[in-house]
Image: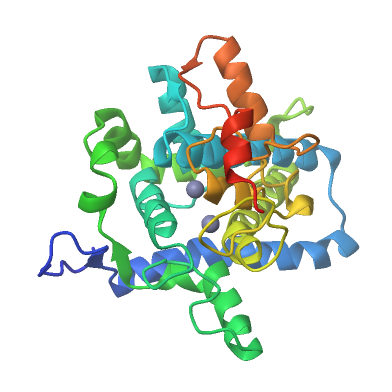
Length: 312
Ligand SMILES: [Zn+2]
Ligand SMILES: [Zn+2]
């Protein structure tokens, strides 16, 4: 358990401090999938990968990735639409399966990121250490993954009182260990049972590796690329008070989150890729949920809002 810090100021952006056991847990869940991604390159040249692993991995990537982008980010952090209860719970579970922490922790860090974006107080700005090349290299590593080990946690009472008060989200957070285990083991079970009349242990291991570990590692690094790459590079068609940029090549694999310049210019918009031709699968799915009657009060961008935010 994290040691409790006595807060002199209840409105401080940071909350309790992260203890060593918590950092070890972060290290395991950040490190092992990442090692798997690196190892996968070696393995690929050695034994290859089956198409079943790729299908299971792709399905898991799409479900968990959109759990983060639609659920954790656009719904719970920014309230860019309202969801009915089954959709809300489904998105919270899908996001938890991405193994990026519970929704309260994620949303608290992210609301703080928007409040202080690229200023002191931002939990993960690549500009933290200065503008020289060595400072930016250090800042990139920090913004990408280093910050996840920071012992200065975000004050949840200040940033996410609405989420803390939601009993469904509390319940999903309490089930986090089981949901994480499911996210890791479900691919193995599907892989082991797929096609064969009997249990195939080799196929189960293969699916566990590719659709479990490698898929989680890839999604982690795509999510973190929004914090690192999209605050350092990209185009700036809209006015925002930070360094957020649009990075087109990350859009298909990040569920449209890399249209990050528009997102900082208009954070509650349900669609980040708001310009013609900008791929945003998360916005497409929200549109579908709206059609199905599962989502309502969606904050779609309109011409006036976009025009008002255009860079001059
Ligand atoms: Zn940002
Ligand atoms: Zn955001």
